[in-house]
Image 1 (cartoon, rainbow, N blue to C red):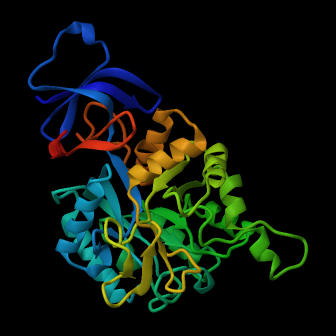
Image 2: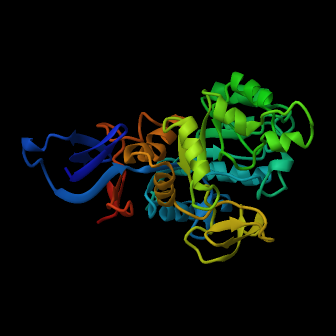
Image 3: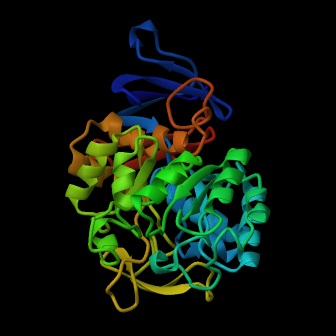
Length: 392
């Protein structure tokens, strides 16, 4: 039985101890080291041993996008994100024609929990085509629609779907959220110019999560452009105010200034806030032009200065960093204890996606997914399902 000894990161503390695994599950966790040397191979690690990171919003990396629609593309993305500490992820779609989304979901079904040589697919985030056109961001325009006309059943019936996004002001949203709840899928809100009251209605129907806080969403200032008074809250204000809603931030040192990361942490707290990458295919690739979405058929964007940009350079267009960058950025911005930062990368996203019974914390019987961090919070080792992907 392999055993690691170091500073174990639990949801509520960091403590010196040992963690061991047998097969693909954690089999022993101890913090009382005076009881003897343990069994089998012991690796002493002068750093932190944390649960593997879980990314619930990720599109691509290392030149590949999940929408490319091949098993090879999926494996490439998974291996790229493993280098940054991710052990499980929700493959995330983009706005696209229905046949491309069908292909994405079919491959996701086939690779669910399967070895990839890197992170493993824990499910799919069905993301688009149900976006408000004015808030679509860098997503392709072709394929946009609403659930009243593009029936969701054919997509939501796939066993891989864990989370699904809709703009709450669109026709058919109520039926969509009811269908999600019926299937045990988490209803998410995003790419929306909804009012506070429209968001509250969606929450009453079962919506529980909001995509990338502060990005592609309505707020008081935007809604005032269509109504002089009274000023109204939008999706941003509703997310911060409604306790039932969890949310996520792209902590890539480019999308959000430190004060916004701190605000998200202060208001929502580590149990209702996850860190995500929202990374596209340009992660770990040189600066230049890339396709967001299917290669040659999505939306052309540009990687420069550590972020994705529209071709004119005036708008953000996805991210190009791994979760390790988000970890260090949130630590700096929030000054939160390390166990809370790690919780936003592990147990909280696992709970959001309905996967906390299997992933997200150091607990006997959960997946043997571990990340080894040095004292500067750099990834130095990775175990996925009991197998070394990066050995220190």
